[in-house]
Length: 421
Image (cartoon, rainbow, N blue to C red; front, side, top):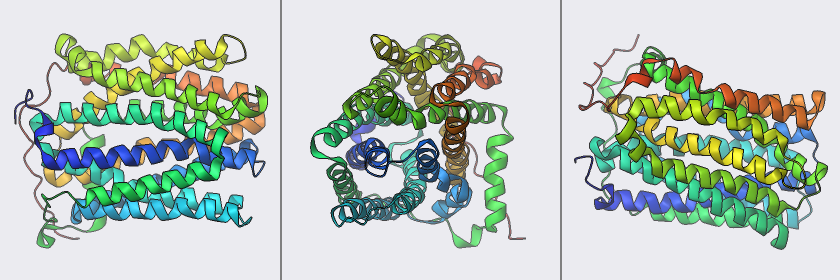
């Protein structure tokens, strides 16, 4: 399938996109609603909000690496469906506990932790099945569509989440998220082209398979640079995001809808970055786009900690939008590059290695943010996060990625099977 051919010709890709639309809506509504439940209903402070955010992504550190090897052994459609059903049940338990007056922070902690585990499998399986659904030559437009969807989800889902919390209460918002996950699972049953799991006779031991994925990513200077830059941006972004509910609601006295709109502005930047990624790469080259766009836009992160009353939310929102524009460009081009540099038998482990590093940084960032919020205050913590985002472009800018003009033209040769040790 040539680069100019549309991935939309694949019925299975259209089905995956529709399911991802529903899943993204649920993810973004719950992203706003769950921490606001903790703050407004359970009187959570900085440390508790930080713990909640940490637990929501901790699973990527705990099971992220073996999940890649497991996904490589399983049918991807089945993994996606089970993950969505699990997320639907978990979030449905929150409004049920609320309405029976039994909701506690401990339950919220458990829900977000287990939801994170389900998300590990969903994300790894989704990115691993994409090359099979559309063909490697159509990965850039396919990834652009999915990153654009993520951006629209950030805008629509977080705006809707803020509005639902403000006008319908947080439990109703979380119930809505549960229903969207259920609808996504039903949609995924329509995928027809089912793959066969990897031959059992070719499997090495779990440790050897995990090690192959780690060597593939961190032994390659381009893949390593992409991982380091994305990990730093996630660390800084989560440090900021964890404190924003406290800043908006407690310190500035703004409504929940204002927080949803601020996060939605970032979603708009993500969408624009995804849409501009291919034209920029065609003009500047893939590597120069990843390097130069990052260097030009990263300092905008230092506008985010300036948020206050008056015009400052708009100024900070502009900085947030620019940072997410960079992230949208990076996601399309960086994800396409790493998929094109990875053989089919390593896709699950490569994606899991990235998820372990990138989303694991979200868990670390949330924990760091909660501790710093208690020790140095909410505002100073925002400056730490802004500084991390402002310097995150350096690993890619200083690596061979910056000189790459085109994506690899041919799929890599599959790795030879290793015998269990």
